[in-house]
Image (cartoon, rainbow, N blue to C red):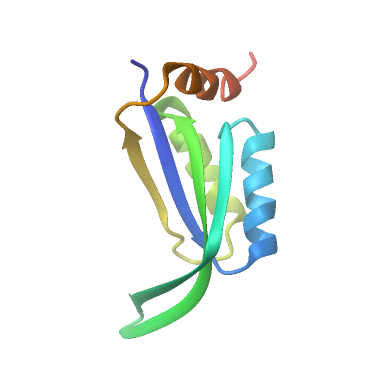
Length: 108
């Protein structure tokens, strides 16, 4: 089985989240981007506990694309330290996983 990954990214604005989702799919860095939210995040930032409304992107990609995807997100994301977490996909429908690989294949 190939190396498949779901990358999650939190962002503070629905329009920014939708724009980022579209840009990573158009760049073929993710086969699918799902926008979830709003969600409420509570976290430590600069010595204080903060709470904020955010939107969560779930991006389906391959292990080979994670570094390029991360670079793309960093360039487009407004946060100083964005949440970019890559989680391995341990299994799934073979046809869906093949589709992820096909749609993230970089043209040469």
